[in-house]
Every structure is written in C-alpha cells, then in structure tokens.
Image (cartoon, rainbow, N blue to C red; front, side, top):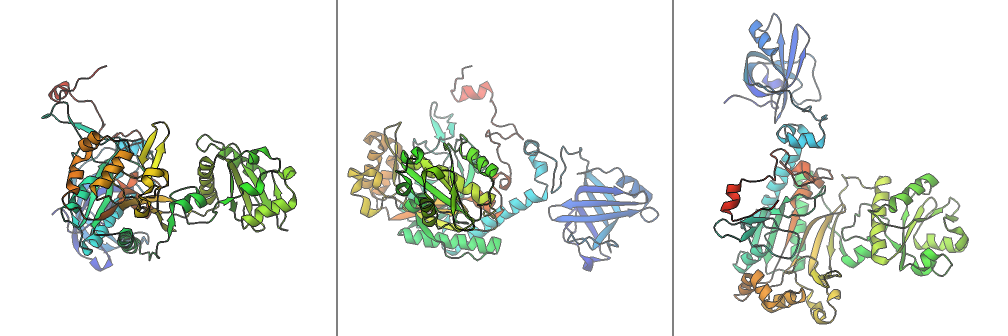
Length: 582
C-alpha cells in the first residue's frame, strides 16, 4: 500500500507515529525557511511541514518543485501543530516528511479545485474528472451512495428482490421519444433503450416475483432542463396482491426511512390531496405546500360591475400574499411585467392592498365600492398588511399562470426554504387526456394504469371523467415518484388500447406479449417509480440534478468531456446497413 492512513483520519492521538500518506497537492505555502503543503484525498486534508535546518535539503528542494494537483507520497512523523486549524478534522496535527515521492506530476488545472471554484459550468463539465475532486461535488455523490444504500436496506427488509431487466428492448409509440439502437444481426431493425422497465416488472408479477425493485438506468430522448437528463436513474418497484392503500403505506415507509437515515429527519404522516383539489387550490398537480396562498375563486363575486377584463373571463382567481401590502408600485409593476412574460402568458395583473385600518385599495377602484373590495378581502381571508393578487382569463391557463405567480411570491417572501421538507401524496388523476391536434385520447400516465373500478362504466360514455388508480409523491413542489395500480385483465387492457386509438393488430404487435401473459394467471398488482436523481438533489438542497450524477450531459444532451454523441465510421454504418444523406 502507498499509504498507511488517509488524509482525513490522523488526530492528536496519532502523535509520534510514522505514517505514509498519498494524495494530491491542494496548496503550497512557501515562507522561505518554512514550507507547508496541504495534501488532499477523498477523505480530507493533512498539512505537511518542512523546515530548513530540520528537513533534509534534498527533501526541501523536491518540495519546491511541486505544483497544484501533483500526486505525491509523503512518509514522516505525526506532530502537534503549533497553530491549530479548528476548521479541519486534522487541524491539530501535521506531518513532518522524511520522504517525498512524486508519483505523477500534473499540469496546472484550468480552474481552481476548491469548494469555491472559478470554473464556469461549461469548463467544469469539460474537465469533469477534475470537478469531481472538489468537496461539494464529492459530497453530492457520497449522498447519492447513501440514498442507494438506505433504499436497498429498506427494500431488502420488506422482502423485495432486486431483479435486472433488459436494456435493449422494443420501441413503443406511447410516452417520450425512444433512443434507438440499430441491430447489426437484424438489418433494418432496431432496439430501444428503456424509458422504464414497466412491462418487464409487470411480467415479473405474472412470474410470481411478488415484490420486485431495481435501481435502474432509464433513457428518454426529450428536451432537457435542470431536472432532466437523457439518461437518468429510477427506484423502480412493483408488488402483487395489493390495492392502492398498500402501495402508499409501503412506499411512504421507504420515504420516511430515507429521511430518517440520510437526513436525520423524522417525517410526519404524509398528507393526501386529490388531483382535483390540487388543481383547484394550487393550479398544479405537484403543489408546493411549504407555504399557504391557496387559490380563491372570485368569478361570481367580481363580474357584472363593468370591468370588462373580469366580465369576459371564464375564471377570476387570486392569492393572498401575507404581509406584502408594503410592496411599492414599482414592485407591483415589476410583478405585472413578470406575469406578462411569454413563459407565463398573463395579459395583466390586478392587485388590492389591505391597509392597516382594514380598508382595501385596489388597481380597479373605480369599478368597485369599498364594501365590494372588502368582500374580496373577506373571501380571501386577508388581514391588514396583506396583498391580493388576481388573474383572469380562460380557466386552465389562468390557474397555471397563477401557480407560477404563487411560486414566485413564495420565493420572494422567503417561504421556500430548501431545508424545510413538505411531502404530499396526490391521488385520483384523470386516466386520460384528450389531444386536440391528434383528435384522440392519450393515457395521462401510461396505458397500463387501471381506472378506478367504480369509473369503468364511464369508459364508453365519458372517458374524460374516468379517474386513474394512480398516485404521485411530491416533495417541495417537485414530483419525485409516481405509480399506479395496473390493469391485469386482458379484456380491460384491450379496451384501453382501443380507447387510445390502437387497432387490434397494432396492440398485438406492440404489446401482444403482455396481453398473452395476462391469460396465464396475472395477479392484481401495482407499483411506483421514484426519480432517484431528483430525490438526491432534494436531499442535497439543490435545484439541478446534474451535480448528483458523476458524468452528466449538458442542456444540449452532450457529454462535452468525451465529445458525445459523435459521428461513427462509414464502415460501422455499412455493417449496420444504415445509409446517411448530407
């Protein structure tokens, strides 16, 4: 071994020991007669000290040739530091080398390898192997490891079995775009990389593996953002002989176990909210419940008073921003411009202040009496010092716009603390959504989701009213997990495919293997999948999942470190029987 100890473990109790350390040179401080080297490895930093007249002259000379990120080995004696560093676990000691060996020199790094670096995102992604040496990134990956370890600990304790499912599978038309892989041995035919192991985990239930899980890579060829990557990881789970309540209880247990074992947080019982209530009260199927500001509908209350914006609106709805009546006109104008941005799309913003004396002053005073404005405040449970913010327009769009405004106000008022965790189950999603352009129904989750048993008769008469036996887990306004009770009856699955516009031949070609399996005694089953990367980023208090993935892609889906994707040789294309055109 090139080391007897790591750079993070020596303490005062190790004084006078002869040790060997190996690592990277973090910094060098040369004061002429004294030279200090901070030696770093994954575990921490240990200070080395060399003094003229004490350390051998050749040793001193070698030390002065070192540069940042040189890989070295140091052998020497542990001594007590005269000037201790309380910010380092090893800050009470230093090592006086008797031998210094350069294991590998290093070029000057393109950015500072420190907690606070001078490297931008693009530069750090290009040299990701250097970025991974920094403590914040290393700690993120250590947290990821802990979440994976604690997940397996819980699942193993509940008698789940981890099963690997195929990575080269069949492409399906539903959901996001597939990444496809040409088959050399079957010219003109392609595999797809899995968007999830959905059908395979259902087949495992048919096979009698009644409790399955997998921490699995999945792939989606879709546009990227901070919480999306073309390849991502799921905690994928399925259970047999269960109903929805069994799934919720089992995986609420997993989430509670992770919070306790990884974050030392005792999570209370997770509240539940229907999709209908989430949309009505928050305009989102993943509401952030760390703060209030629920929507209050005022349509009937404000119409018929001559204000055309309200009179012509399908919905008038608002939020009460507690304590924000002190906002200046400039701040409100800025909020108005904010909601009118193309990303939000509102045409304007109506506001009303509740003054200290209880009177209400609004931007539309000439249309409403003081008593009518006071009625707004009453309806919205506003108190003196609060600010009422109202939007109007087409119902669905206006709710989405107000959701964005609510989140923005929560941020501006300091109500979205990343260390304050609020977890929520959202239940009873619509089973289907109608695509106006395509003129047909689409599965809101996926085509294997079971309808609520009591809603099955509506499949023929009112498909849009059918509720799914589905559930999402939301943490701080981010969807972290989603699942459903599955269809396990061939006839009902065929009925669902028909409703989604599949012909019998198309359904057989795409999913005949699953339909056939249902004829051999498929048990009732259901499951859930958690976004593992998102869960880790939430535990780490970050918005982006990128720093919780060892080698992520950028927003264009590129790995700029290895320059991928890239072209391939014509010989490979010929072997795959793929012709390209320029």
